[in-house]
Image (tube, rainbow, N blue to C red):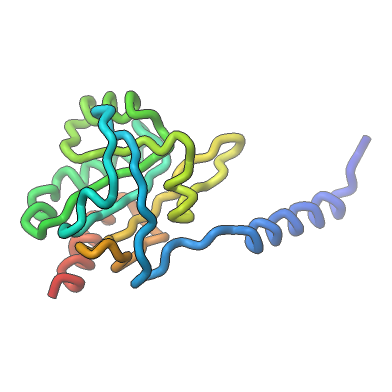
Length: 176
């Protein structure tokens, strides 16, 4: 059976429209950041509320061991001392397992927490989940959360090569 090209185009357009209508929305600047508890690469639970009183850079990334995600993680690691001077904690989130994160941190020399969102709930709560073929992966989004637990800045267009520098610049403005 051959399906006419026009029928396929109409179906794709309806699918795109449906995804826009039913898409979630990321937490807006000034809103309370959605709470969560996820396991880190050490297998220990980490909750957002554990970091009240500190700034948090919560970054979502698609997959351990991929080129863009490795570059982004290396740049956060390279700048970690600058974040610590600003009382900022870096938390990375993907849908990979805690074991995958443990291997990724060991191989790449990462000294900040990577959190395993294997059930996709946190990525969904932050509207940071993408269908990649048959797989669901975290979108490359970042949220700066202030010491009171509110979203201070959101990045939904991220270039992993320069993102850490962008985040540091945003923090400098936010902490004035």
